[in-house]
Amino acid sequence: MSANVRRIAYQGEPGANSHMVCAEHYPDCESVPCASFEDVFAAVEGGDADLAMIPIDNSLAGRVADIHHFLPTSSLHIVAEHFLRIRFHLLGLPGTRIDDIKTVHSHVHALGQCRKIIREHGFTAVISGDTAGAAREVLEAGDPSMGAISPPLASSIYGLDVLAEDVEDEDHNTTRFVVLSRDFVQAPAGNGPVVTSFIFNVRNLPAALYKALGGFATNGVNMTKLESYMVGGEFIATQFLAEVDGHPEDAPLKRALEELAFFTTDVKILGVYPADPFRAQTA
Image 1 (cartoon, rainbow, N blue to C red):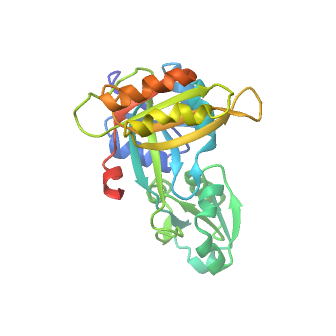
Image 2: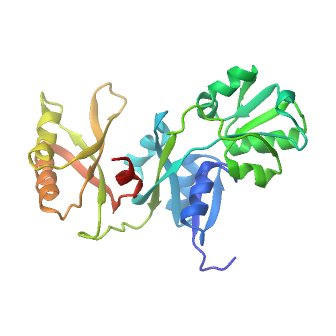
């Protein structure tokens, strides 16, 4: 591997959905699997990888909680976003028939998104740490009664047969991924749709959040995300993650951020990056 080849880290084993996104959008990068999200962040922060591919939201399961825990304290910056239509196949050992399967193994979220086929065939669901790892477990066990609910790529990586395709309950199942970098690479203004992500703390006063967000409404800035956090172990939501359409150099957003700063104790821009075309397709 050439020293000039960039490395992109992801959580999971080869064949996971995060690996598929890396291969699709960063084919010239070396994809680096990591055991946990914490390891992914550490790989980039420590210089072992150049980028991180991180799932942040799913259209069925909602936000990825661990990521929203790491983002506010991380030194990394969001430089891109990508959306992936989530597909799951039922995999088994070569020569296995679907009637042979008694247990299906996968990540807890994948099992929850494939309830119909599990009920239809009376499978016993077994939780694995990762969707692609479940395929590896089936291969290593060599038990024809075991199946895996895994992404399509896992079939070819682990040499398993596809017993049923697209077994997810909903065909709109989509995950949004963000790409993180040590460098703050800001998308240029005036060159297409842009997303700005930031976190802020509000003063613990009545109507503080209402006043802080008022500038976005009065300046016509569309806010697409607002998530709250507990800070310091207290049951008072004082920190928020927000995303808006627009560039900080655009006059409306610039005015809104100035007004936000007036009513908050801290504003940190996490990233200014091109909006994925998927947003326009689903608008």
